[in-house]
Image (cartoon, rainbow over all chains, first blue to last red; front, side, top):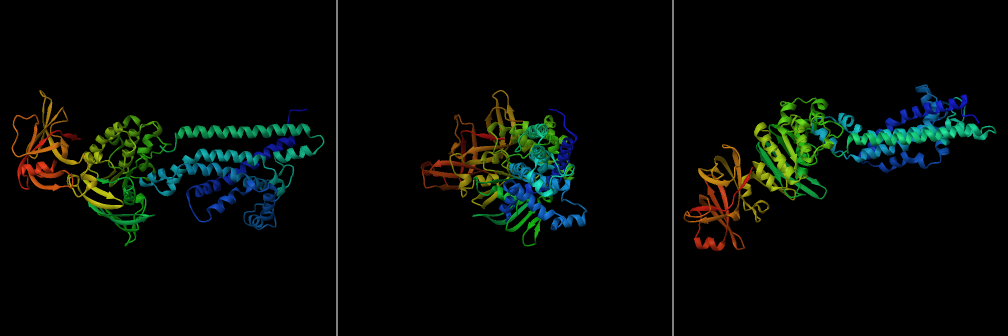
Length: 234
Length: 355
């Protein structure tokens, strides 16, 4: 058995990184804003929005993939809109894989983000306002930096989740080599083929390494930042 | 001048405050839950009352009827919170200068001057989480001062500190008052702190301003049981340190042309001092005693006698322009035939210096 990756496997890994990178880039800003809103604001429909955000965790991934297909497929309302207005096509493209990965990773990103906004209860923001600083600047100078550990660990967990996403991706954008065949999909394909055992093992090892790295990295970052901030109620 | 006339409902609690105070330090005093914090949050613009008007100096910052509500950022109220609320991700220096780099405020006083005054110059490069409670609170005071406020509002700044830390901060607050002359609202439920600092007192009880006025007058007002009853009730007298006798180690204070002596060296000559005398430590005599161990004998005039239902009577005496309270038994009042207008001598057993 060869320890070296084939070109197709390299391609799948690169594609996964690309897909996960785009997914996080798209998902992080709305996750931070929504996390802040859910943590700090009370409004009617709060529970409903909170439930919707977490839906991809409990919903069968196939269902999420199918809903994406209906909405963002070539005939879908949103799919047609993005194609006409921005020239962005999701169906059967790697961008679609990124969309699916972003949607599936969203709840994982938002959880630690929301938690870190909940930890500080707005008292430091009050102090900032009383020193003459506007709401927006206070958010950028006080609220956001203090939530950074949560935001980073959310981003890393979300990235790992996006790299390994399977069900929604294969349902929405299928399994096209070089376009939508990410790590998990390549692994699945090798498992299906008679000669794919070595490839399966290689990709499995890589998936495990990536996941462990993500978890350790996320832990280190949040611990280091927490130490630097030295408790948020000072 | 701070002019407040507001009322507000907060859940099942209602707040109603009407008072006018001049500059200097104004203490807002009341028990926990009396509405002190709610009141100053409205003055600072952190929340808005249902009705009324608030003016700081000439400037109306809130007027419900005229739809004026100057936002907290523009009120020019420097807040010092009980828990300091320093920004943990910035150095002490960045915290102190926050209003300047984050909000573009200009300050008449410089960082160096403030750091020197508050004794925090050696902390500038540190982060807040390594500081003691007293140091944090001094940084918070400096940060508020450097935002160039028109008034400074301190919300129980000493409440979360232990006794020795409190003693560490009080002198700085006095220095602030003397050197800057910035009007201060000082919220506290500790009468001890207020006696040492305040010029004016606003008494808050169950959400209502019950009374307000000069501190000494408020403390001896028998109609305010929150302040003037209890075993430690008494009078606050303003005196000047006249002389220190090194041989006997006695400090002499001038009080309305008379002399009070206290053991020990208690400051520098010429310094103003607040002297607190408990009513139960004052005895009255019709003639000046000779050959007695009590050194402090003041010539006073009885202004009034209030007999309570118990065995005691509170005798209000005048020393020049100031008031001294004596708590005697009704029996002694009767035997000595004390009446208003009489000239008597107050014998003071022990005197505490509040400074």
